[in-house]
Length: 307
Image (tube, rainbow, N blue to C red; front, side, top):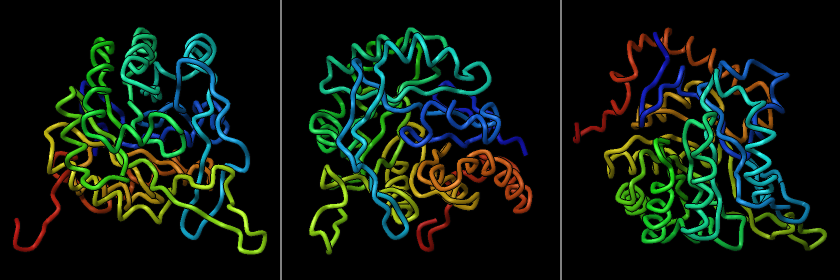
């Protein structure tokens, strides 16, 4: 089967992208596989100015997952555009820029800088990072702010599709999804991490310097599937699923509930070649299960009594 997917103005050779913050700018992983074989690379979160991120320690392992509180450490948009993006394989695979800012105007300014770059296929608006003191999930928990930020980015995005990355740390994901759609989003991506905490009972200290962080990995997949399912039911724009993917069957689960594509994250830390292997494993599983097209399989979940 042809694994390519088309949505929100993009055509990807397959539905497997790497999630922001888990794959650097992709170049760090070039020794583990062919970057051009991926459906896309979502670059590490970018801000207008460089950010040092949170103090160490910033990562703690948990059962079936990982806590992080990186704090969007990045070199800033100017360095990314001038020195990093030219080295990325943007002619061979989609490069999606992940945007972080502290207000709608700053988001708009950042979008204007990145949208001007030929090598960027789409803009992903991060209104859901739990590890920053300004913006992030503070926006993502407020539907009005989600809409305002989305509108500000959309105005400066030109022809570039705008994805909005949503937080699961909300009362109703459907309300947030609709707010992004009303703000002009071309697609949604979800979920970002769940807020969590780990402590050391012996030293009586938190395991993260930031005290709380974002939980990711297999532990969050049921939450992610629920959120993607509810978002797909709530909006008319495509959804990209994220959360705890560790095998090709996980990818099909997200597509079954309605996702057009997926992003893989924490598994990249465990196996640096994971995303590359996943593309091959997905092709084999699709063949084994006799799936003939994404259009036929996507959203075909059968719920007894409701279908």
